[in-house]
Amino acid sequence: MKIVFAGTPTAAALTLKALLQSQHEILAVITRPDSLVGRKKQLTESPVAATAQAAGLKVIKTRSIDSTLADTIESLGAQLGVVVAYGSIFNSRALHMFPLGWLNIHFSLLPDWRGAAPVQQALIAGDRETGVTLFRLEDGIDTGPVYSRVATPIEPDETAGDLLDRLALIGVSALMETLPLLESGLMQPVMQSAGDEANQKIRIARKPSREQAQVDWSQSSTSIEQLVRGMNPEPMAWTMVNGQSFRVIEARAIGPVDALTLLDDSGEAQPGACFESHRRVFVVCGQQTILELKSVQPFGKKPMQPADWLRGQNRTESVVFSK
Image (cartoon, rainbow, N blue to C red; front, side, top):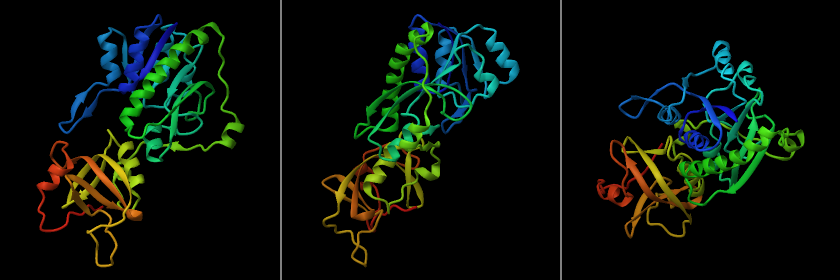
């Protein structure tokens, strides 16, 4: 099948690599323009652009597809567009460039978690299951008819990065099974019906902000662990200590607090209070629960073991995280 591919991040690049190794022909690749990356703000091309250029493919870098560009892409003669996390919404003209339209690989079980960040938001919400949906793009955000869904459990220690990598592989497998059926006319998408929407939660997966990534220590340790996992690797959960931001890279919820020596004057454990036991570092959270810190990154430093960080603090006063 002749295909135009659209995508931007690493998960999309993985899908493009799989297509390049298949019998299908990639006529062009659409991706977002180069962007400033890292603290040094270096202009960097997207993972999809790098993969496409290494394969000698025609690369179109654009934030949107206007009518002139749509005419140019349509003239290539592709039968289908495949899109994975391109990062922009296609207008009506772009949606109708190909006979078979656009097949989108989305990392949730639609109709739930429509939007830009379904993996992150599923982890933050504490979902136990997610999956991949292949559907045809139409006007509206992730509302198009579905070709297939593949469900998978969320593993207890998976971060958003871990889960996205795994879902990308599931998506590749589902795509390779779907394309021959689509090309031969043996598969037609099924609408996300009103019945589905009535019987399921439909949540919107907005891209997490830095504000959402800030830890609220009055929440339970389970909720905070979910936040930490969902924000890893981007934008990373963070808090404040000694007036500086402090990243929590990895953490694990412990249960309710039975006995603590870190108590305030009211006799209650203070949320955000940090303490060490047998070279393990813990933080008091809401609902008398405890979070164990597993990996942290103080401001201006590299990730490190929490015990090494705590050992370097001024211990004349208790270390307390705050907003």
